[in-house]
Length: 426
Ligand code: AMP
Ligand code: GLY
Image (spheres, rainbow, N blue to C red):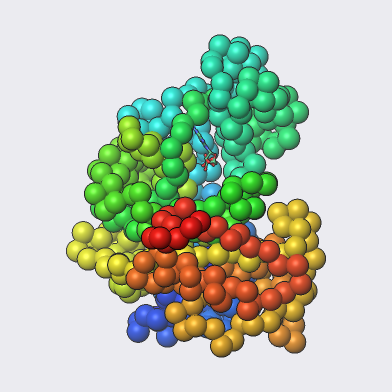
């Protein structure tokens, strides 16, 4: 069969890498892809947001299976468009992807169907939102409704900060229409886990859990990024926790969507805050996470094509999905200056002769007399091992060999999971 991955990040390279291993796939396309996907698939020079051109290409090349990486094409209805042309595609419809694209939609869904989440209220009036903020104890979390590339959430330590965020979103409209409706919610504490699941609209199959790192510098300092690393599994989140979340959050959410007449099919990503009282939803995403996917997919044993077809055909109940007991640690290598301004076109060296257990998933890379940088996040380097310690030691042994001018990466991915060496002095 012919398969296609839409997107150009390391998440999409990881998905393409896994699809490439399927004996059922004889041709693989990535649109638009990067230098890494070009080595294992045919890149199509179509932006992930041009859904009309993507549907055209899928028809022309007679693609049997498409998977959508990023949220923007889902929110603009790529799945509906493909389905209207009988092109098999993995992902939620435009209506169902509101679970990510509208924080108000997902908040109201969770409140109505009693899915555990932070207490909060929705506002369309700046004056009413101000009044509410002044009546609540800090800290508070202020969320803009629409897609805002990670800039729509402010965790405000004080009432002043909360009011400033409200003013930015609702009065100054710094995020445009995304700030027309906002949520004010209680600030939860605990540890964050990402639990992704495959669902065909009825059956839910969780993946292995993962943690991601959003801040640019070690110790969670500095500005937010698209993600600087991830690992799986978190030591503090057991298989019985996964089962509990499946029963109390993932399955109820899929049932709730069906009950609302908006069946949800594809990958459902629950961002959770976990503490001794239990787990609550911080956000849903309508797709694979980045960089979680780069630490999850290397652990998948089952053929990804079998899973995707079962999701599309509604037969997940008949498929056993197997995961390796290995751990995986994934480290993002970023351009100098990222997440601020950065240069591109810098040559990358050291991509060959690495440990065979290493995966180098490309993101912002292009071919130009060799592989050069073309984005802020350039590569995700992932390694598996029997334990997190082994995976972490492996990845950090090889990362320094991969060089481009000014590259930076976090040194503490999965570090807090590793107990100090017995007898060690540090
Ligand atoms: P979201 O896009 O909703 O996941 O928010 C981005 C980040 O903001 C999350 O990963 C959390 O670190 C933080 N966050 C969101 N909601 C809350 C909350 N209610 N309490 C504490 N932190 C939150
Ligand atoms: N890692 C967070 C996300 O994919 O949105």
